[in-house]
Length: 149
Image 1 (cartoon, rainbow, N blue to C red):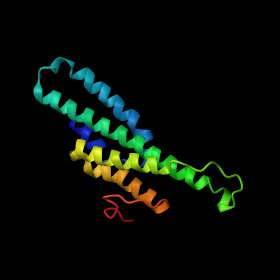
Image 2 (cartoon, rainbow, N blue to C red):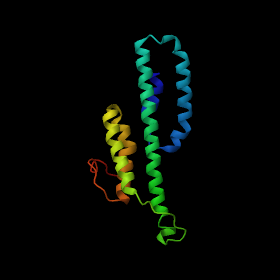
Image 3 (cartoon, rainbow, N blue to C red):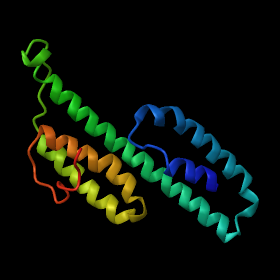
Image 4 (cartoon, helix red, strand yellow):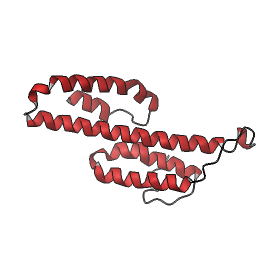
């Protein structure tokens, strides 16, 4: 269990291709672990490790969804001006961008308070994602000066 946890926690959670390739493998390993520990349901240390891995997967999937949300916003915002900004083949413009940004900012704060042990991963995915949004849209954010690249 420790190897699976270490493998996931040290991977690049911002690399969607890496995650697409590896999440099914990690889920398979988790299923194997769940089968192997069925006889140890009364062992507190094993149950604690299992809870830790489940929490890790929860955070991973939440951040994966939020990263995809940010990527969709950025992709749509670039398509709304059309081909090379000429409005040829332009797509729709996001009308409620402030709602999206407020949602992402609130999720960032919620995740930091709910999962303080995963601050690095939250910053890697959601913090940098919000920083990318700040390059396209102007908004204030409590942590806006924490991310530079």
